[in-house]
Amino acid sequence: MTTEQKVPNHIAVILDGNGRWAKKRRLPRALGHKQGCETLKSILDSCNDIGLKYLTVYAFSTENWKRSNDEVAALMQLIRYYIPRLEKKAMKKNTRVLIMGDRERFSPDMIRILDSVEQTTKDNTGLTFILGLNYGGRDEIRRAMVKLGREIAAGTLKPEDITEEMISARLDNPDVPDPDLIIRTSGEMRLSNFLTWQSAYSEFEFPAVLWPDFSDDDLEAAIAEYNGRDRRFGGRKSDGS
Ligand code: IPE
Ligand code: IPE
Ligand code: MG
Image 1: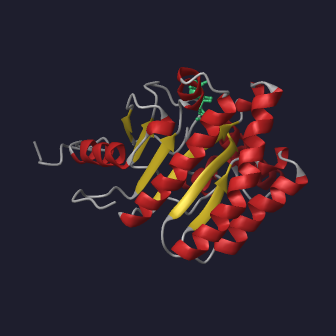
Image 2: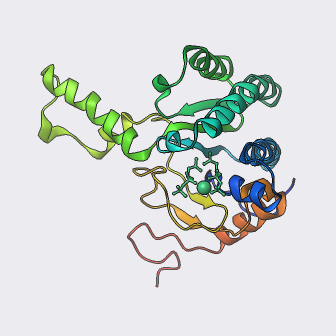
C-alpha cells in the first residue's frame, strides 16, 4: 500500500465485528476470528509500507474471558498459532512486537510464546506493533497503582509527589506515545476499556465495516479523515483563530 496522506505517529484499532462477520455467513464465530487474524496480517503489511511508527490493536480484553469456553479456547488457539509466525515475519520486516495486558492470566506455554516474540524482536527499529491481550485500561491503571503503592510502602515515594508522568511511566509500555487516532470497526461507538489513560486526546473514528472486511482502502480513508481533523489539545485552533 502507498499513501499521499500524512501518516499519524500512532494508530490504535479496536478490531470488532468478527462474530457478526461469521454470523452473516452462518459460520462458527471461531472462523470469524480466524479471518480477523488474516486481516490483521495484511493490515500489518500495509502499516509497514506506509511507514507507520506505532500500531496498537485490541485483540482480547480482560472482559472477553466471559465468553463461552469454546470461543475462549478458539481464541487461545489462534494466538498460539499466529504469534510464532508473527515472530518470524517481524524479523523479516524489522518490526518490534510488544504485548500489552496482564499475561500472568495465561498458561505457562502461552506466556513463553509472548515473552519470546518480545525478546526476539526487541531491537527492531521499524514499526512497533503492540498487541493487547488480556488487556483492560482500568486493569492497567490498577497495576500501575500497585507499583506506586509499593514505592510508598517502601518509603521511596511520598503520595503528594505523584505526577501524571509517574503514572504513565508505570503503564505497560511506557516508551510508547499516546495514540493519535483510535479506530473501532463494526460501527460500535465505545471504548470497551481500551487505552483508558492514553486516549485522553486521541481522535476517534467508527467505520461501519466489520473487522474481517477491513481493507487498505478503509485504512486510507481513516487516515484521510484524521488529516481533516483539527487537534487543539485544549489550546487554540491550529490556524490561530
Ligand atoms: C472482536 O470481534 C474480537 C474479540 C473481541 C475477541 P467480536 O467477537 O467482538 O465480534 P462481534 O462484536 O461479536 O461481532
Ligand atoms: C472489545 O470488543 C474488545 C476487543 C475488540 C478485544 P468487545 O466486542 O468485547 O466489546 P463489547 O462487549 O461490544 O463492548
Ligand atoms: Mg464485539
